Length: 395
Ligand code: GLU
Image (cartoon, rainbow, N blue to C red; front, side):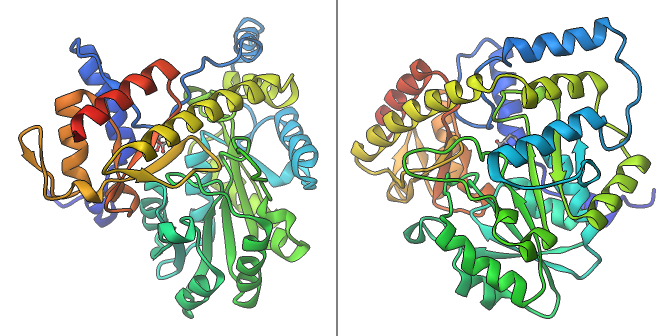
C-alpha cells in the first residue's frame, strides 16, 4: 500500500480531546473520575437556546442553509460584535462554521501557502500548532514565560519575524494560561503587525469570561489598519455552554471572508441548521445566563488559586480570563509519587490520574513543559475534592 499523506502521518492528535476521551472511558467502566482536563462548561445549555433548537426541528428548519450560515444568524453575530466591541461588520464578512476550531482551520487554509510562517506564542492551545501545519504553514513558536504573565512582548514578536512571516496568531484570553492582554500590551504588538504587513488571527473565544479588573480589547477594534488585517474568531461553545452544538464564526475583511465562503461551499457546507437556529437565540436572546456562568467560574477561580498557592510544592499565576490555569509542578520532579518517579509533567499527570483519579492536561501538550493545565469549568464540589486529592498526592 502507498503511504498516507505526510501531514496525516505526522499529525499529533489533540491532547485535550484525548483527556476527555480517557475520562469518558474510565467513567463508562464505573470509575469515579474528577476531571479538570478538557475545557467544557459543566453548565447545561440555557433553556431558551435549547427550545430554539427544538423549535427548529419541529418547524421543519432541517434543510441546507447557505454555506456560511443563515443571514439572520450572520446579522445577529454582527449585531453582537457592534454592541460588545463597537466593531462594524456586514453580513458577508461573518462566516459561520462548525465550531471555533473549524473557523481557525478554514481561515488558515485561506491565508497560508507552503513555506509561510505563523508566529505562535507559547503556551498555546493544542490545536493551533497542528492546524497551521495542516494548512501548509510553518508554526514559529515563541515562548512567553510565566514571569511575563505568559504574554508575548512586541520585542519578542519582532525578533521572530522573517521574510517568510505571514501571520501572527493571538489568543486572548489565553488557553491554557488564562492571560488577558491589556490595551497597552496589544498596541505595540499591533504596531509590529503593521510594520511587517502581517495578517492576524485573533481567537477571542473566551472573551466573555474575564475577571477582576481585566477588560477584553478586541484586536480588530485597535485601528482601521488592524481591522483590515485581522480575522476574529469566536463562537458559542464556551460563553453559552454549547460545545456540542458546534457553532463558531470568523469575522474578517471582505476578501478573506469571500475565500472562506468558497472553502466552506466545497468542503463541509454549512453547520447544522438546527444548531444555527439555537445560536441565533444565543446571540440575540437574553444574555443573563452568560453573566451568571461567568460569576460561577469566577468563584471557582478564586477558590482554586487560593488553595493552590497555599499548597507546598505547586504554584500558579492568577488567571484573568477563560476557565483554565497552569500549575507549576516542577518542584515535584525527581520525587516518587504513588510509586512512580516523576520526571516531567506527563509523568505527573499520569500518576495523578492513576492514584487519585484526578484528570488534568500535561503542559507539554501546550508547549509549556513543567506545568499542568487545570480547567475549572467543573462544579465547586468537584474542585474541592480534586484539590483535596491533589494535596494528598503531593504530600
Ligand atoms: N478547547 C477545549 C480545550 O482546550 C476543548 C477541547 C478542544 O477542542 O481542544 O480543552
